[in-house]
Image (cartoon, rainbow, N blue to C red; front, side):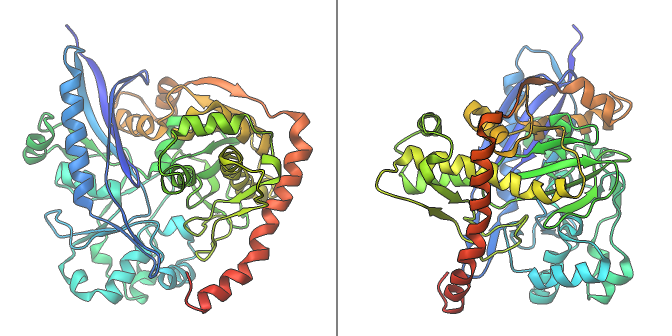
Length: 485
């Protein structure tokens, strides 16, 4: 019997890893998930993880998927990994970490970010892990002296799997100017040689094979950041194709035919030739509902039950608004001192109203990121929704109504996993290029159009939403100045 070819795809999220065996038609043979902790200290801006917990998750997922394959006759043709970022992983020459990973939630490298932006002309996401790496060089010289490589999450796992350290770049990306990095005091020798994402960087080592249960020599493909993987897995191909990345942080992006400057957003080459992506990542819009469910309500209700209650509340949550800035905010505010708030809370509001306000806030945050992008002349034809939030038809409907965008729901909502499989499939030559693989391995299940009768209500809600942070920011600044966080 001929065995069907599948890619072992791993999506390394901020608090959990998801893995799947994905066939070349985009169908998922089997999937698994593992969680791991993150250490956050808001007082000093620290947000770190132990990369060894990621490796343990990958090993456990791989073994489960290999075992669950059973009699399905699946052949693992390649391994591809995407990951959260920019998150710095510092390792020695063998792949052993020299310090905990500095995650994208960490805010200590603000000065280094500003300095490298000025020196290189790159901003935000385009600088990757370099600001955090420069922070290590300046503040932890002992760690730097023991470090051979500064890697992203997906590059670290590829290193552990293949024994080869590489910096993975998508089409159109390049490393910052070496002279500018040296002028800032950065040791460029600790940046691994670049390779195009989707390139086979090596075979699975015998040690990694013994740990994962996968055949030694299986090709390991250079991966991408989780957002880029989601772009592929959601089926983005053309200018005007947009995405709500879902997940813990939340984010919005749209493909354009040329670079675009939009306030509060990044613009970078997309992971497809000849296309750019403009957008922004938030900090905690997806995590806000989990926080409300677990930390506020104590886990007495499921996410599904809460969303069902919210669905019975009228749009606008009876005058209640929520700011989802529970971890500060990235795009479009770029204000680590921003804080969450319920505004308009009264005795008539219950948990259904509060849940509705949280769901609407996630959509309002997308609109907040998208507004200057649209104002810059970018067309948004359709927005694909991804991840756990996209399982909720209520939440998808709210996003369409609040943003005014047409919302498309992919067949496989874990789009980052599918996107990694797409990168892996191209890497081993199963498809001629990324567009061919995307067309073959993705499809849309349904489309939701915004309702015209709610436009005025949500326009007014949006005007109020965007006025709240500027009004309370001076109060928050005084609290910080007084040592209250």
